[in-house]
Image (cartoon, rainbow, N blue to C red; front, side):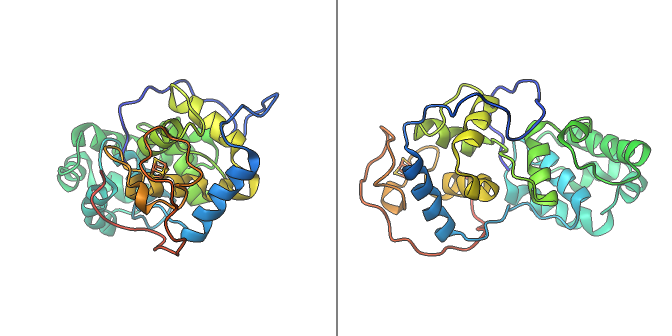
Length: 254
Ligand code: SF4
């Protein structure tokens, strides 16, 4: 998963935070329902694109994905996870060898250090199990709020909103949940997305941003919500046909 250069703030406790009122959105509740209904038809069971075999390898993969593409991380971790899919095996492998496996990934020296340190902490403090709360997850070296949210969602089925560069861009570009920081966007999205769509919303927005509402130039003629979108950047008002797409795609991440 990509991680753009966007500011982060201190973590807070719960995904659906207590809020006195629903924040104002440019979109009505009916429009929001329609937007996510269409995403749900496009990808009924969206999946993340980071390969992993258990919660531990997911934590490692997400931690490695900062400033890197999912495809690039997958290429490196396939061989690594084949021999080290538990904290103990990762520790036995050692930092130097981990570094060799992941040297094609940006910031690999620091990331190798973190992989070993988080494996050690899992063994020492969590009985070699990946913890199931955000508060515990963010104690692990190299794991921030975004990584914790991805792990809670993908490994433990919790509805979270891990704001990466795609979600941050979409929330602001469409004026869906504009905010200056990922935390602000996360907070607003969590509050405006209809409950029934919240669990998958994170992946729908990432995939929409990665393959349609792209960073440099949104491909509005291919967009299923072109009629509803209020982005000043949009170039087309006619929605693309609503057809089911693969749950996950691999390709160059813009
Ligand atoms: S219409 Fe264009 S700008 Fe709006 S969501 Fe679709 S791709 Fe993005």
